[in-house]
Length: 125
Image (cartoon, rainbow, N blue to C red; front, side, top):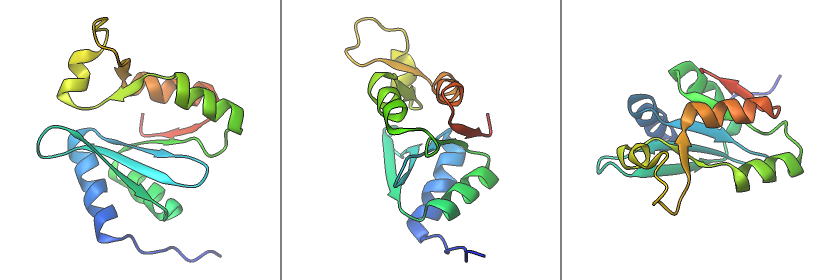
């Protein structure tokens, strides 16, 4: 049995803020990143290497978790390069379908469904 590692304080805070602001967790091959809206309305990211404990805590907190670790590198690379940026901040949400914006944003639920359709494990949809 693998012993679960205790979450760092910054990981606990990021999970709390993600749950409060509609953030999400993206798990790749070697790291986990928690995305959330910060106090100024911008997006903040916290990279975590405590992958299993962070994943479990995010699922328990009700955050959308996209676990892309089962995907092969080609599929994962294609999704990360070609998929729009998940919109979680107010600014991002205003830019969804805005053709004058040089960055392509999409609702988080769309991104989660796209990853899931390509074989990722998605929780809390």
